[in-house]
Structure formats: structure tokens, C-alpha cells
Image 1 (cartoon, helix red, strand yellow):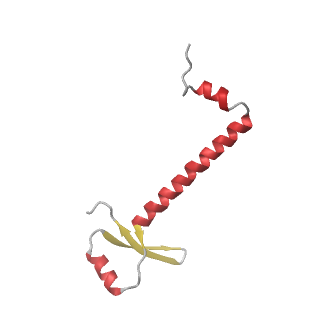
Image 2: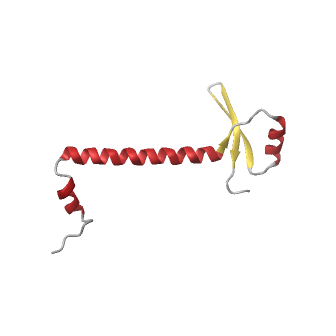
Image 3: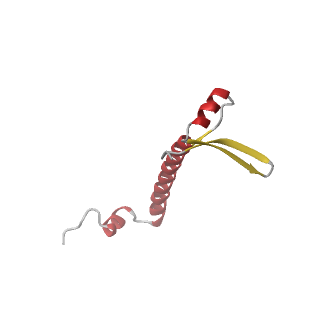
Length: 90
């Protein structure tokens, strides 16, 4: 019977000869996936949440635009505020 290159048993036999090597490869793959997820999240959040510049003309323009909404969050005596951008206009 001809072996298929992507057969998991064949790969296990070829590359994962011991458990330490398998754990190391799985850890590296996990770290790469986590890094990619963090980069994607960072790029997405930069496009969604904007902080005010304390500039009156910018503030007025953002209030006129229906794609933006001013956000105020009060938690534990701290007041966080900024602008929320809607990707799909209302």
C-alpha cells in the first residue's frame, strides 16, 4: 500500500519519535498562533476605538458623523471616554 505524505500516522512516525520533540513542536505552533491572534486583535482594535484629541473642531465633526458615537465608561471611580466607530454605517 502506498503511503500518503499527509497521513498523520506517517508524520507521527517520521517526526514525533519522542514526546519531548512533539511537545516542543506543539508549543512552537501554539506560540505562533497566539502571536498571529495578538497582531490581528491589535490591528482590529486600532480601527474600532478612537480617543478624543480634546480639539473642539474634531469633536464637533465626530458628533455630526453618524458613524461615530461618543462612549463614556465609569468604573471604580475612573471615567474612561472615547469614540466608537461603526464599520457598518447605521
